[in-house]
Amino acid sequence: MNPVSLCDAKCRVQQAQEMLSLWLEATTNDDRTANLLGGVLTMLDGIPDVMDAAEGELCVMDALTRSGGKA
Figure 1 (spheres, one colour):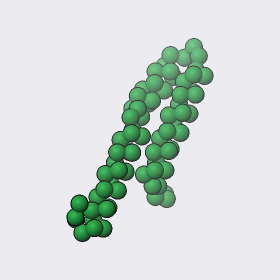
Figure 2 (cartoon, one colour):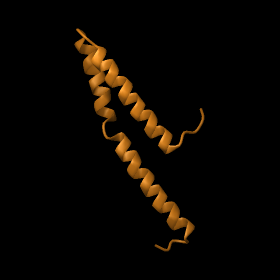
Figure 3 (cartoon, helix red, strand yellow):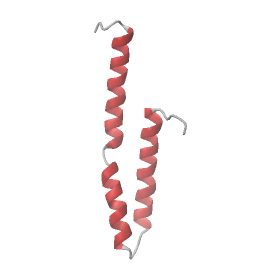
Figure 4 (cartoon, one colour):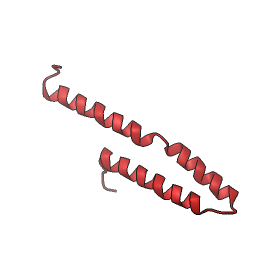
């Protein structure tokens, strides 16, 4: 398995959300599948925002490390 950057991982989560949303829209007369898709979408909700925040914090930590800990 190849390592994936945080940015790429965020994009993959967003792509998964879009695909699941399209699948949910196309699902008719199948409440069980719709409920499962809705559940997965709910679990993924907000994850890209958290990943953005984590990336920002990592950049700050990296800058501090490179500057010798001086703000």
